Image (spheres, rainbow, N blue to C red):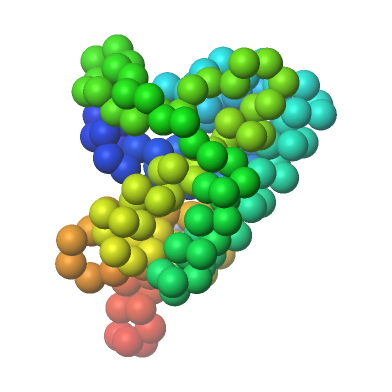
Length: 178
Ligand SMILES: [Zn+2]
């Protein structure tokens, strides 16, 4: 199992960041690519068509817009708008080998984008209320635009991964010693 999936919280945020990154890097350009990200995070089998896949990508753009917000008041307003438009009806669900956790019910039929947006609204709302600030961001390493979830307890996270952080430090060190 992906180590990050072992942690319940903020699994919803890891899912959203992975989904936004997949659309951004092109691996989410097809219905199959999008379904793979959802299923990798324990989501429902969506069986997307070209049309619903496109709707998912539009929904992902809305989510990316929120992940770009750094001011918590603006983020709260944007998330509240999403909660109004796509009310989440959460239920406690126990996925195999996981603890009980809050989920929004899978789509009944043709509305996967609405499911995604209500899932995102709930996950973002819980995460913002738990952390109290916008604990997410976009990698500051040159040439990397990936979104990440900031789970750190001390300094705000700046890079999507340890690899990007190391790359930047090594480059800075090289410049200093030149
Ligand atoms: Zn990065």
